[in-house]
Length: 202
Image (tube, rainbow, N blue to C red; front, side):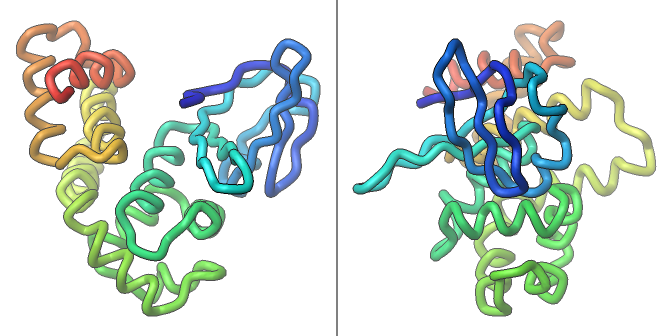
């Protein structure tokens, strides 16, 4: 699995980019949300990736933020009938925060407004994802007024990342708690929390 690519941005379009990594150009499909965050062509950049292997091709999907990649993985791995193309459409049509809020609220109308997502698909997304992101998203929404600090954001991001990798929400929370109990210093670093939590989950 290719986790990320780091190099010079050789080409950038709303649907894809080409990144030059030591003389090799990688073609990466991206959502509009990531395109809007890209630097100028010619600048160095780091793109988080998800590799999809098909019978006729290996396709790389890229994201500027971990939140975008985690949501993409949740959609394509846990929602029946949603593939990479629709995953990109969701990210292109709604921010990660708005999407999670819509799932928690059961706002099928808002999700069905996304290009390529009909009412039946929106209903399936809400039904199949509510248990996956519901608790974490509700916690995030409830904490918004209390201005959660970097530690809270790191814990939240780590749990969502673990869920997107296929672990149950209760197991993800339990593993992160074990890391925090054993290594409190890791609390502010989502990547470190994920790395250590995986040791308890594998």
